[in-house]
Amino acid sequence: MKFKNSIIGGVTLLAIAMMILMPILLPSITLATEILIFALAALACNLLLGYTGLLSFGQGIFFGGGAYTASLVMIHLDFGLLGALFAATVIGSLLAFFVGALAIRRTGIYFVMLTLAFSQMAYFLAYTFSDWTGGDNGLLDVPRPPLSLFGFVISDLDSVESFYLFVALIFALVFILARRIIQSPFGTTLVAIRENEGRASAVGFSTNYFKLVAFVISGAITGMAGALYAMLLNFAPLSNIELLMSENILIMTIIGGTSSLLGSLLGAGAIVLIGDLLSSIWPRWMMILGAALIAVVLFMPGGLWGGLEALYLKLTGKNKSTQSSSSEDKK
Amino acid sequence: MSNDYLLQTSNLGLDYGAFSAVGNVDLKIKKGTIHTVIGPNGAGKTSLFHCLTGERKPTRGSVLFNDANITHLAAHKRVSAGMSRSFQVTSLFQNLSVRENLRIAAQGRDGLKALKFWISQTANKAHIQKAEEVLAKIQLESVADRFAGELSHGQQRVLEVGMALCGSPELLLLDEPTSGMGVDDIPIMTNLIAQLGKEHTVMLIEHNMRLVMSISDRITVMHQGNILLEGSPDEIKGDERVKKAYLGESGNE
Image 1 (tube, rainbow over the protein chains, first blue to last red):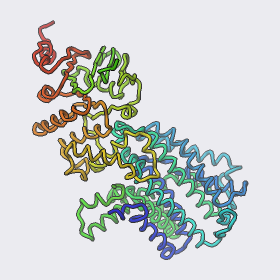
Image 2 (image 1 turned 30 degrees about the vertical axis):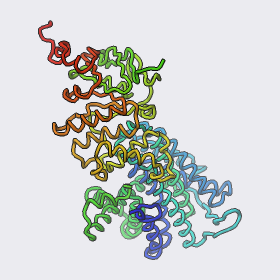
Image 3 (image 1 turned 135 degrees about the vertical axis):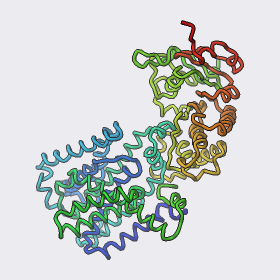
Image 4 (image 1 turned 180 degrees about the horizontal axis):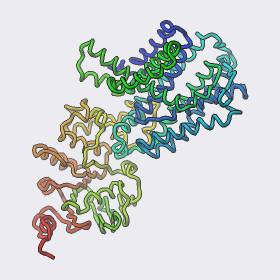
């Protein structure tokens, strides 16, 4: 019990096991890298959707913003790898602060519509400022500088293996941080806000501050994911900041399951993998994605993680009451 | 000169358009008492209650709490000032355990300190202790690990009061604590409130007369937005005007 819920035990070990297995089992390591990058974005989305109950269409703004920021500071200002990642994280959190501060002034459907409006605005801004963003063509020739710390080059990250390792390391750190967050006083308050915002306010929480900080953390992680994606592709396409990106991140989060951070890794894995396998066979593969989303929402409300959890409990013959205590966001 | 009154309203009123839900109310709640507000439906009890909790901004008048003017203080900030409330319609974190409901409520007292996302929730022993203490007080230990939504209605009403208790309030505001409770459960609530009255100042709105008469130190009767009468239970019981207010004033026209 204690071990299962500690921030480095339990699901964190499962996540690390998946990170070790993915490059071995998947057809290419680049694919595994892409999965981890989107898993970062989905995990950040999950903090908002699963733990705070906020459905944000703004995630693409932070993802695209992070990708552009990292690319621009590397191209024009000669930033190193870690510097560029840091800049993208900061810009991601600032964008999230701005969007969040305005959007959380409304709740429910109006909140969703506000994030949607911001998302559209960000896309057209990126499209309009094509001198900076490359517009439709995207930003080309994004470098991937070597990983160096205090002037010592640790790895040149030229090989796909070394870049995967680097991304996996970042994912593991963010995963552990996110586990800490959801089990902190802050995280438990977010769950309380999701459950019943009126009551959370009545027991003394300024719920808007909590929602805003959740937004900022989510934006920071998403911005970092965007930066890594630009480094992976050596390219920052306009599609990073499109509404479709926000949708994809949301779909990954929902299909993976919103009750667990590991669900986000499963969701990102499933979507990226399905896309990779099917897009070469059938150009209209997105239809299958739609069907998968409908199936999960209708028949598997807990997402892939919830389904696996239920299956595990069925196989081991545990009854339902133990399921509640094993669910991740309970203490 | 020290002030005996924990809460004082003067000339407090709340209008909805042309309609005055609360007229001009001077309510004084003495420290350490159980003070009940009663009155027929539409007397303005709930509107008055909302002005005290901060849910509604009063149209006129002021609210003093511990001699500080809190008339315009936001509802959630009143918790750290030392007043907390329960709801007439049960409002809990349904999918969290009873223990976690109480722990979060205790955490709420510290307001923005709970923004700490880098420490474990178990780091603050005071909140956990408070939750355990309240759990014992409201006698729900046996169901502490069940989801709040799984409890019986009576137990949920008790937990509702427990949530307010976790804010370690000086003043406990209870909005119809027995609302919807079965007759068998009402003595539990009566005892609980009587017990709480020993440590807190309690102000409640209530319809159950047996409960009101047995535990109140003071009773304020409201009628048509104003205070009709205030007194001890015995004084209220025998008063003709109160009976009239409840039974209607037909024949007076």
